[in-house]
Length: 417
Ligand SMILES: *Cc1c(COP(=O)(O)O)cnc(C)c1O
Image (cartoon, rainbow, N blue to C red; front, side, top):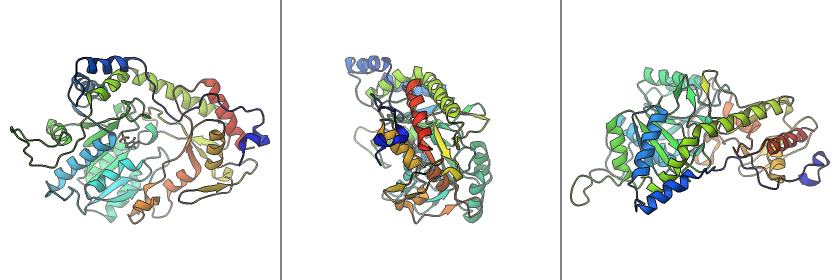
């Protein structure tokens, strides 16, 4: 399909500068703290930038203990391991803390939410999604506990910066004596009933990956309520060295600690998190207004929550879906008046130099997880697959100008012509 010569797009010129989905935004302070680390020779995994961001994030989120790590995925691994050990004790070397145990996992999410369960030998059971926030459905979770009453761990994410129904999930977990790993990688700065995401789980996680709301270029953090948990995570992240003159090990270790240089970038970003959220919020509402005459809706959120609006997403009404087909790695779609499809819209945006993205493909549809159980609220309707089929992530970069966003909105309109 050649969008540039398609008469529906006559008059639209490709963007001179690419419009990104969500790219890093540096402000200058990052350089200062990175330089500071280099000038003072604190460039390893110890230093003032690390201490400072651990303190600042703890205060910002309202959680007593934080440990800065090399990635959100590393933080999730240690979070899962902490919970696994609380539940089942310390395994022998060569075995995971969750070996053979089932764990309830968000289904519609980035694979990094759930993969760490498998790093620890656990067996994911994927829980379907609800339509009000596009996150784990408490009704499906209840049903999963009926089917698998012995499960003691839940890994749950807040998608695209929108808090899920985390207090309902907390109540269900408490009823069944289960622990929660809360993946707030995409939702740093979002609140639910006034509290920041990341504080609802037994252990929480945020990410400083390059496309998140603020970034260290990479990096992540584990959020803990108990000092002992934080100390354990810190010890594991630095190869599990015991207090001895030589390298003494009673536990497996990892090289997961954040460097003081990366921490300098995060330290420079921290003062701007609320500014980024404000910009993302404006982008969301401009889309909502600009797309209101089309047969589409924006990604919804709970009135009790305040998202960080990390990514603006839209969902095409069922009766406005043009014919389309998705295989494992390719797709086809057709052009129909008054209708469109995620493939067509993402293709048109890409042709003019704007980056969108499909919705996360649900884990139960991923070849790597195809044999794992999947639980829906009624054993029938697959909500996650439906959102994946009809939804897409719109260009949500906080540096996108109003003029650029107007063109993006115009292109989307023309896809329905
Ligand atoms: C980005 C992300 C992660 C992983 O964070 P990294 O810092 O990239 O390792 C985990 N979960 C979700 C939902 C994410 O979007």
